[in-house]
Length: 531
Image (cartoon, rainbow, N blue to C red; front, side):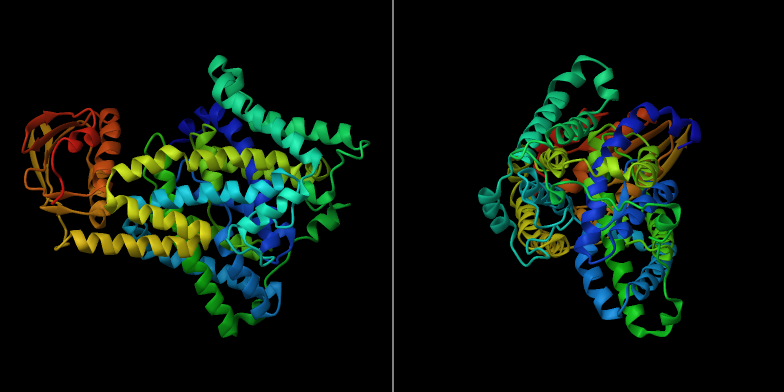
């Protein structure tokens, strides 16, 4: 996107960046705490993820920051390597390895995760966000924000923590949590439809201001008073020197330590996979259906990790919680991610004391809305109606993420998805065929093979994305016996882009010829596409 295009969407990006800032702030601190690292390291990662990675990335709406999925790895690595400075060296080296991944085009791996698994990941994360925020909403805060594993850093389970919350409800956090939830729902369902001003001034900002005012007014009331654990906890430096003293630098003398290299490769591999999956999921959520260049994303993430590790920050990935909050709040370009990074930097430098007056219950209410929009009940019905080939990988992924953790849940979902595809697909090869017949208008022909599965979606997606403007595409599916739902979704998304790029599409099928179908999803519901 051109600079003019980026800045032309500031009226949408600035309000979205404020929401992402309030979502990111407690997660940066919580992930640092869950990782056994200094609190400031999470903020560094959030700032670098926003400003540096946001600037270099090709994603318009993805937002990067410290990775919850790496918290357990970081916690173990710091202990194994003997010091935080040695661990920072591993982060820097991990970033260099990610640059190599990007240069050798490792980014294509993200395309090999089926749609059902990606949707299961989004839904599972949405559910876990809601479950993990329930204790914070009611003022019971034994576990930091950002600990997304079922068995938490305090060795307790997600559901046992919720049950304990019943006996530890605090009146002040609960009241402001309910007020915030009411404000957010009112803003989302009613006010934003009434006037443009309510779209510019986002509900989460109003909820946060209400939370600060409520905290300030209730400090003299013993029944409503907040404890420090129920508030945001940003480090408060008392001078410039103490602020700069929070930065830590790698111990480069440990570069010959083989354990440092093992940790570096682990960070690079896991962070890259987490980023690629988030990119795939974010592109699916994007209402404009932009396609993020995955290899460029790895280069951006690698650069971000080099810088973050060099000044004391945690490893960075693209993060679905921040990215989905950005999309839901109307973010249009990468400026929302960049501005959120600057907001983190400015706030921790200038107003840390004010930030520490924000009740965690308010931010829990914000995350409730984010989680609900990721895990809407209607999605379960939709996936079930698509058939067992979509439902089983989807529900396996959701269960794995909720009851184990993000990476293991994705692994389970992918394993089940592969088994399902192997059962239904007796042959898997490259099924894409294209012909170029220029006659005034550039004409192209794409013939889909007898069986087309999610393994082919990367190639088909790239071919469709390369079709030039003002073209004529003939799509022949007469011989297609099995057409995976992933491919149908790609065609549905492409039809929106085709209209903007003046590409006419002729769909040739067993039922005849259709010019520029209104909906591929509805079209393929009317014909047998499975064996």
